[in-house]
Length: 110
Length: 113
Image 1 (tube, each protein chain N blue to C red):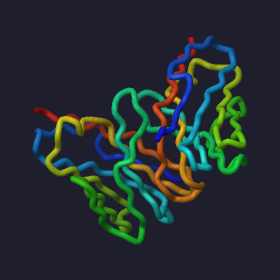
Image 2 (cartoon, one colour):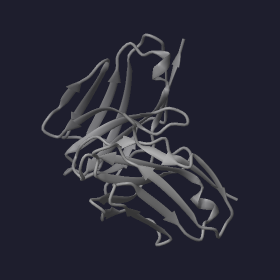
Image 3 (tube, each protein chain N blue to C red):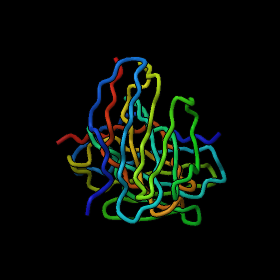
């Protein structure tokens, strides 16, 4: 079956630095990916998505890159802020069902 | 606008008991999905319902069941609770059962003792 995994379970950055969170997936037919942010005690919150016909998409302070050749995607957060501290999940979505990785815990040091 | 609402927020049950969790999707959303999130892991897909019909089911035992009502709200039922069922149960709604972003509720924290 399909699987989605993250490269590092934890990431610690200094406030103001850029953060990069990586994710690998196994299903080459996957065509829609979502990054979620989950803060303690809350449900996952949508950050940004990307479809397989794109290799880059930008939002406010966030950029997602998709490399279909190596089945890898990344989330870049510019000028990381303390409020960015959370667990980040990549997910492969298909017809309303999402397959999540185990998450990367991002800690932002002041 | 109300987001996805789940009830109750916390629940403690004893092994062998039954539990019912409830979810109201965002107004206009017709698809509801349920996920189980064990501490330290990503959410695991349990069920998806669209227009009151089951669209998908994850790798969970038959003790888990769900349904969707005409107003698109949903219930997740778990019978014969085990200690391993302790988790955060998340509900997510989407416009349709298609590839669009899902909106999650805050979850129900179930503890089985």
